[in-house]
Image (cartoon, rainbow, N blue to C red):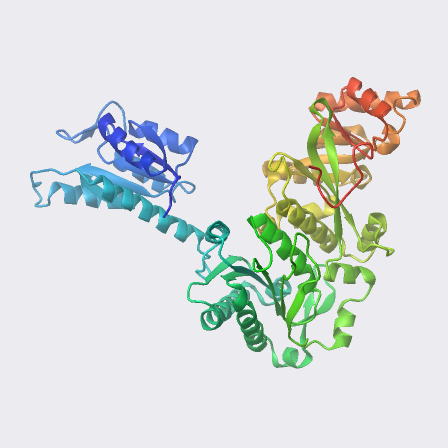
Length: 597
C-alpha cells in the first residue's frame, strides 16, 4: 500500500484539518494544508500533490447557498482541477456534512451533495462525521488504484516501470533468491516502420501473451511480469525457473512470429524495407533475446548493479543470430563470459546475413561494437568534478577505432544517424547504470553533428523516453567546423533544444577563423576552447589576443568557458587567473572507461 506521498487537505475548519493531518502523518504521509478554495488551488498549481482531501462546502454559506468573501467552494475547486489537462489526474476525496432535513425535491441533503460532487469529478465521497480509519484506508486504496492505472501499459495492461522498480526493490530488500529476465525483440523498429503501428501493436500483444503463458506454465505462481515500454518486457522469477521459462518463450515466439510475415518472406527468412535515404535493404525476421540476471552465486545490492550486468550481457546475446537467452554465472564482482543456455538456430541464410552487413562499419553498428570512454571536466575553484565528456571509439585494434575515421566513413556511407544513435545510446546506458559520487549534479557532454539533432533528439520521442535522456544534465557538444556554412534553420533547432532543458556547447573554438556572430546568434551555454589555443597559453603570448577576445565574448554572452587540452600546472594557473574555471585535459585524467571517485 502507498505511503509517504504528498496529500493536500482543503478545509476551512482548523480542527478537522489538524485531526486528519495527524492521522495521515502518523502513517508516513506528507501533508500540506489550505483553509480556502483559492488557497487550495494555489498550492496545487505550485506543488501538485498525489491526492486531495477537499471539503465540498469550504467557505460556503449553508443557509443562503452562496460562497462568501469572493471565495470558491469545493465543487468549483474540483471542477477546475478535473478540467485541467495537466492536473486532472490528481484523485480527489470530497467531504461534506450530513444534513438532517430532507430537501424539497425529496432527496436527502447528503445524496444531493454526493451527486453534485460526482458531477464535479470527485473520485470518492465521505460524509461527516466520518471514521478516520476508513478515511486512511480509502486514501491508500485510491492511491493504489491511481498508481496502477497510470503505471499499467495501455497496450498490454501489464505493470509498468513504477511497479517494476518497486518489485525489484522488494526482492533486494527481502534477500531471497530471484532472477530478473530482460526481454526484447531484435529488429522491431524496422518491422514497425514498414508494417505500421497497428501491426506492430498486434505483435507486441502477441509477445506479451507468449511471455505470460510461458511464465504461468513454466514459472512460479507468484512470478512478476512487466512491460518496460515498446518491445522491452521483464519477468522476475527464481533462478531454477530461468531455463524452462526462457526456453518456452523463445521457442513459442519463433513459431508465432511467422504469422506476421507473407509467404514469400517466410520462405526467404527475411523482408525488404526502405531506409530513411530511400535505399532498399533487407533484414532478417524478428527474433527475441533474453538476458537473465540472478543472485544465486553473487550478491546483488541495488538495481543499478542488476542493470549494469544485464546491459553487458545484452551486447553478447544480440550479437548471436536467431532467438537466444543467456544468464549470468559469475561469482565475484566482475562479469566473466556468461554461460549460453539456449540457442535457436538462425533461420536466416548465411549469405543473406552477410549481404545485410556489408562493410566493416555496418558490422560495427549491427553488433553495437562501440566503446564509450569518459573524460572528466574539473571545476577549478572547488577542485571538483563538473561533468564528463563521452568519447566514442570503434573496435580496439581496428582501423575504425579512431573516431575521425569512424565518423567520416559513416558520413560517406549515409550511416551517420545510425552511428550517432548508437554512440549516444551506449553513453547514456553507462551513464545511468554506474554509481557516481555526485549523481544528479554532474553534466554529460555528448558529441553530435548538427544535421542529426533534429531527427534523433527532437523527433524520435521514443528514443528520448526509453533512454532517460534528461535535459537538465545533458549538454550537446557541436564541433566548430560543423557549424561552417550552416543554414538558417539551426538557431531554431538550438532554441527547441533549450526549451527541452538541454544545453549546448560549441567545441574546438579558436581552431578556425569562425564568424563570431554565429556564436552570438546561437547563444551556447558552453564554449570549449581548442587544445591548439590552450597549449602553452602561459608562455605563448601570440595566442593571448585571440584567447582574451574569445573569453570576453563568452563572458558578455553569459557563456561558461571550458579550456580543453590542459596538460601542465602552469597552464592551469594561468587559466584560473584569467577567469576560466572549467578545464579538461590530460593534467586531470586521460579518457577512461570508468568515472573518477
